[in-house]
Length: 321
Image (tube, rainbow, N blue to C red):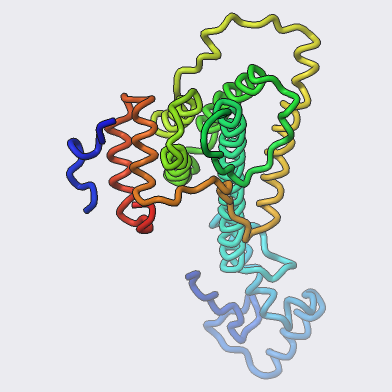
């Protein structure tokens, strides 16, 4: 088969203001135009002592606090009396609260990315199970990704294919539901892993099968957000109470997993989303080999694949270029 990259891509190989003084050295309500004598001063202070609390006669910090309260209220800050908090302290508290909220948002985004990676890994794992059944009689046995999957031996080939097509729909829905920023940062990672996965089939010279078509659909979702699902072309099965009852555990399990992931990431500030351990190619030009494999099943992706490969190869290790 002709190399589609040779002809179409020649790059191949290449302050809050300080408080005013409230302690004037004179008691309130004194006419400052005439300074009292010492005797008068003592009399005034004696009279004031009878009518004024000790806090107001001997504690100017309380006066400052009252002033702070008025100033804070005029600026919309919480009342500060009793706690000794100034508007500056309130501002610092709001600043800290803002950062805490931002951190919680980032934690939720990281959990969303992990959920996306998990659904991606489930899809790749079931494709490999389908691949194993299709490749009976091939000369070489393909390596498997290091992804846990429950035993599928009791399922028929048709059941496995049905699960695969369902996982493909679930991945498309998960990719569409996650925050845009999450998909933007995770998309290229999943594309690279998908190209390497397909390159393994090329290395082992396996025939083109439906497994290549499904992996092409996965790349189509990663590139365009959707693919055509053959599932929708089939007659809709009857959905009765028993069907809903049988599938409810899977629905609730997915919701539980998402809730637990979100909780786990919020409690652990250092936790990061981890990409599944997808099988890797060993020969050179893995991205190109994988893209060549996919483009034969999805010709409409040629332009996207060529641009992706050129971009990925810039910083890729030598064995992948």
